Length: 52
Image (cartoon, rainbow, N blue to C red; front, top):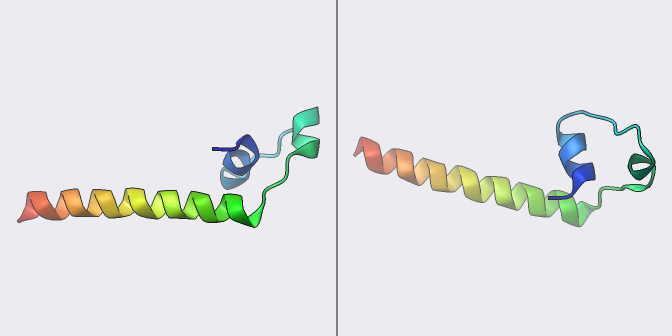
């Protein structure tokens, strides 16, 4: 995952030169959301299987 997106999701502001030039694109946000959704769904399936 891109550093800029990782920092932004944690509320951090990079104070180095890279932070000045890193930008988060809509595609990066979409990719992050898709990955988190997939992780959530996998965890939900595992949890539901263990309960049944």
